[in-house]
Amino acid sequence: MSQARGQFSSKLGFILAAAGSAVGLGNLVAFPVMASKNGGAAFLIIYLLFVAFICYPVMMAEIAMGRRAKRNPVGAFDAISGGSAKWRLTGMLAIITPFMIAVFYTVITVWLVVYLKELAGGGLDRLSQEETFGEIVAAPSLFGYAIVLLVGVFLILLGGVKGGIERLARVLMPTLAVMLVALTLFVLTLEGASAGIAYYLVPDFTKMSLSTVNGALSQAFFSLSLGMGILITYGSYFSREDSIPGSARTVAVMDTSIAFFAGLLILPAIFAFDPNTNTDDLSTSSVGLIFSFLPKIFLSMQAAVGYLGATIVAIVFFLLVFFAALTSLVSIIEIPISYWIDEFKMTRRKAVLTQAVLLTLFAIPATLSFGMSEFFTSFTSYGGLSKSFFDVVYDVFYETILPLVGFTVCLFTAYRWKMSGLTSELIIGDDNYEGSLLQRYLNFALGTIIPLVLFSVFVSTVIQIYL
Ligand code: PHE
Image (cartoon, rainbow, N blue to C red; front, side, top):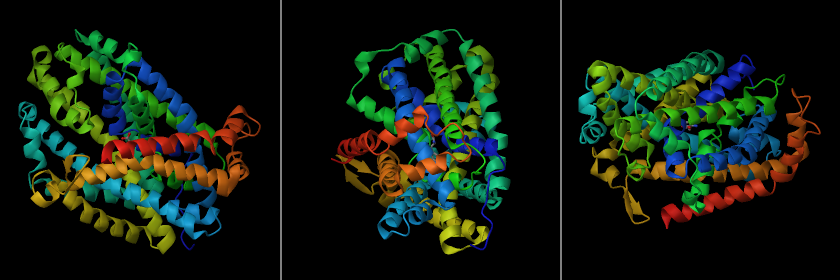
């Protein structure tokens, strides 16, 4: 390869960038709602078990694959398998998935930009009206905002691994943590907040079911950015001096802590301002919750802190969500870019440009899926529901495919690379791994129960959504 590959400047750089990817809409919105609807602390316990016993090993396997091969996901499957066409093709899944996730994530991030602009102009009351969300997502002016956002995102990516991705995470991640803590403390001082905490944390085992368990695993997988090729690619930028098990653990702890904190923010906020909230009415989709439900909650704060105060709280919240979404978006677009660079020997500039064109091409129909174009809005139907182009991309690449990609990573590592290969990578930069309990667990589970669980979740999701 002619060009020097990008690399993170340090272990901290990697951790912040990986956490920047992991912390996103999934943590700030989907997790709190899921936890409160599915038995509170009971859900939390299952979630933690999945993170520790299923996700953490897959995380290490992905990072190790990337670091060993020093390539993008396709290149990693290819190089480690010794050029097997079958495994190379499997690796394609870990390129197509992030490519398509970027498509709908871009659309949602553009909406966040519009909301921020609207709030800055004093429009909190408009945003809290029922019909506003529908109007905003169907307005052609979205394309203007999309151009501004995408130019910004691709300029960051042009800055490369260290100067772009890592630099962004170094600034935004600490800011995000401070804002989250400050906002949470504010909400917890409100009268009525304790009802929300109780709802969030009191365990209710009667609400647990098979679909809760499935949901917890998919959520954990998604939240940690697994099955998207991200950690394989970031692993390829990770130094041989540092410990993979240690860094992956830190990222998992950070991601889970932020999800937990977000619950302490969102549910008390909802209950403080609407004590009669019936959580069955809370939208299951993060999108509905952020864009339709929460503005109403913020507006109702005006009784306590005035309209300006309520607007400021809303701006801080949406900025927080926007920062989280931006670092995730940048991370996911980097995967196809690394593919163009490695496999087609493109310069970074050319790869970024290529990806900008391709993403724009797909983002257009996804943006048109909310009423602007009848064709893309009523694109198809399955599972008894009419689905837009956006819905199809969302269902396939977000809801369904991640555990399948994780499954292929496990099989590849355990049976092609072999556990001895994985171990030989994991001991680099980590003196404690060899002979540890963790190593024994991975040797046993990565080729057996972990892929089995992932495959079962994949199958049951397919049945649930498409049949
Ligand atoms: N981990 C992110 C989240 O929790 C998911 C994600 C990562 C989505 C990267 C898109 C891009 O929201």
